[in-house]
Image (cartoon, rainbow, N blue to C red; front, top):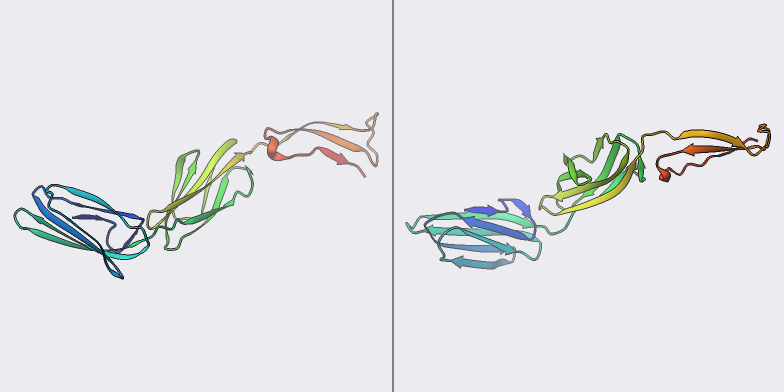
Length: 212
């Protein structure tokens, strides 16, 4: 008998099992919570059996599965598990803005009511990290990227946060400096205008300096 979820584990709202025997004669399953029996099913259909049983509310459960084959061999399995339908939560802390420089340093805060199983980081849909850290650093070239952090809890529920960022490692270029004085003499009160070339317009650079 193969059962999912495994013993003493967490699951989301669906569980399944398979009774594997070419000479299967009869099998039955009973599911209990703290209030007693809540679900019972049996079948005399021979062959391999797979069934999904939806559980619509959270809590602790245990199941008893009994299978018989045509030779009257019997196997009984007991499984204890918990149903958790609540998704985890995650907040992306860094980068704090849409413009970032390489290496890109990601920091997030993930929380769950039963526990975090693992975290995945995606860049433009490609998984670049799987683990349990709360941060990740990667070298990226200049350009725009979609960054996603996906968090899974122990029951398999997951949540994802995404952010479009622009990587900018190129320094701006000052291509010219002019003043508001006709003869370009710099005195007190002169305003210098800097012409700045920047490949990422969202950098928000200004180019005016006043000499006092």
